[in-house]
Image 1: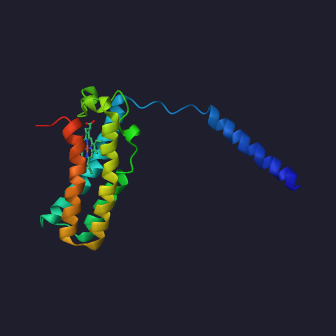
Image 2: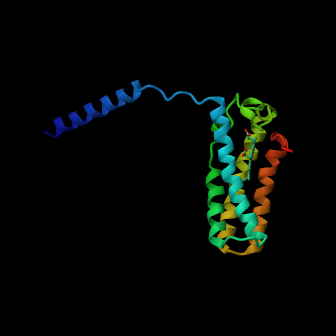
Length: 158
Ligand code: HEC
């Protein structure tokens, strides 16, 4: 009895597996979609940094807003570099502002990407304290991590 039940479960699992194996693959994302996805991802960073900047300048927002913004930045920093910067998505494709040089210096760009995470972690910790001085220091450090890559690999907009 138990054996038969297990057998049935196994059969279901196998057919589910086969179904997945034969399910049509999701259509590959176009370069336009990939660039848009990267820009959306960057906007999560940008929005978070803006919220924190406003708070620091006394232009509004609460410590909770800062904590949420820091969490948003930290979450975005977990994004997969390779997925965000796939080949074939350099400017001028889809009006991307990503310099082709990024793909000629992938290890450097990837390191710059990886460096954002610890800076974002510190921003989260600083936001927890609710102390402006600490938040300001952590925000500056995070901003430097962003700027390192932007200076090398992002086309400046006028
Ligand atoms: C590894 C490189 C890299 C890092 C690190 C990085 N960026 Fe970017 N960022 C780019 C590139 C490249 C673009 C241009 C994207 C495109 O247009 O395809 C960009 C674009 C942006 C944009 C404009 C998005 C739009 O609307 O088109 C914002 C805002 C931004 N980044 C904010 C940030 C912030 C804030 C951080 C740090 C928390 C950060 N970025 C870290 C490479 C990076």
